[in-house]
Image: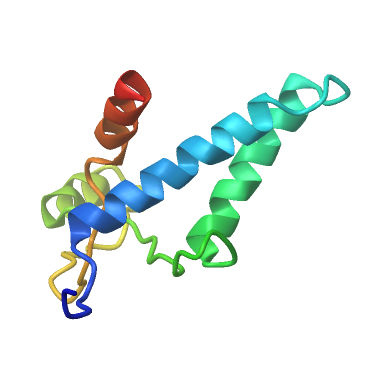
Length: 110
């Protein structure tokens, strides 16, 4: 038996995206008494609960903007606000950046 280890970012992303697919399936297959809006809002709420770490055996996730330093001067010149710059250098197991591709791959391949 292999020694326990830390999950890799790819493994975490796969678990997360698979759970989101389960959420979609659950809300899509509810009884007909739910409107489309109620189902969509339910799926969104379930996703947010997952990010908060309240379900699915998954931990909470860090969700923060990934602003770019080069954008700051652009927005200042336009007298507009900008998003914080986070480089993620201290983040371990980052699954962001390609979640939509992972979801499409899972959706298309089952």
